[in-house]
Length: 254
Picture 1 (tube, rainbow, N blue to C red):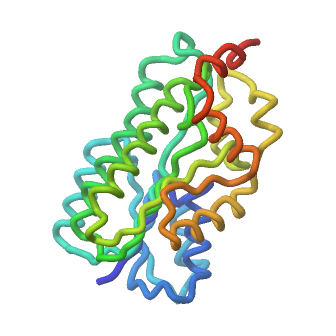
Picture 2 (cartoon, rainbow, N blue to C red):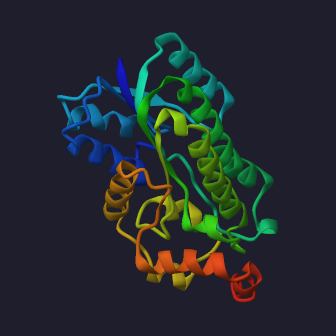
């Protein structure tokens, strides 16, 4: 059985990735496994696309028991995985001493631990030449005061993807980290519980459809990174050239 897997498939970038998969006439997958916490949102997919078979997994990837359930299912069914897209993740803006330990731990669990566990679950079943796409962020390029845990987590994702690519060259896997700036999704509904969105993020706010379309094309070309928008591409370049201390002099000030 050939499958595609999308985490965070109930909203935001995950939702857009499901749509672009359904537009790809070459997909040829027997099932699409959609994973997210909200069952009612996942149930919309088989209603919208009746010709495609979906399997719904209403799981919380911050919970060990849910990851164990996913692992057991995969080990029992031994699917041929052609596509893995990991979009599950969230962030909460606020200084470190403003956030509860529970909030910070949950960000680490979802943004870092779930990446390693979901990858470890599906990697042994990836088809040669298969595709893997991970939602990172432009926040991975440098530390962000007021968004410290989230930015550190996305730096982890970027580093992890680079190593994953190197380790799997012999399998011809196409593996891409997607690093957009701010994107117009529900992400900010939770992110902004404790502070306002910085003005510079509002200026580079991107359309999720365009970010996903570029990410899809970049992954087909086996690009390591997919960076949408000239402003974010310039930010990445500047973060590579200049010491991070230069940016930190100005970031996070009220």
